Length: 306
Image (cartoon, rainbow, N blue to C red):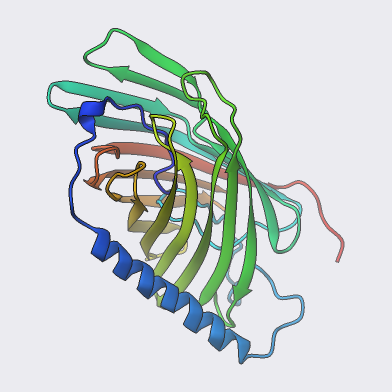
């Protein structure tokens, strides 16, 4: 799951404005930027390791699947050269305004291809999407735009995954079914970090900028922020809580924010199941609430030479 990615189909009367969050959002962005800068600066004082692994493991630790789902923020690590990983699921979102109700169902899917030790390619989208409204007998179904993207792993600190930094970029060309096709090419770019600040706790912040299109076909630039707090009682069981912010959520609109919580369970070394629930806490276009269930699986498809 990622930052407010779905293109919402809402009636104009559902666009009520409100005046919360901008100052909080600015504070969160400032703190996260300071974290990125301070850790990166400290990294320069250490002698770089030769052939540094992008997914360091502690002694005796299993090499377990590390998926970007569930949760709003994406991780900083790549899956490794010669590896393929699919992360998919189902998601249902509910919206309402007065007597009007809207139910959206879609199948978010991310395909990850490890092309080098620090690079991976992405193919990502909400794929099949269906929208039902209570004040209309029409059911809108089709395929949402799919993005082409990448993830580049920038830095790992010494030790057992103490701090990691990466960048993620996506471009959404103007394709998809007529009902969901955008009029402009859109995309975003983000910095992503993972920080194990306590033995069983970690933070996963994302910060970036997006070039999007609202449901009126108006292009706009938005700031992006997400933060996930993970609790890891074991290496295979991960409850979490996180928040995602986009400002503005539509052109000339307010900031939008989503809060969610869930759990990921690694049942085999290369297989993970997850479930999450969340809701809009600010803005007008976000779901209120949403439910998601997913599965992630990886496989080594090639064995690159040393």
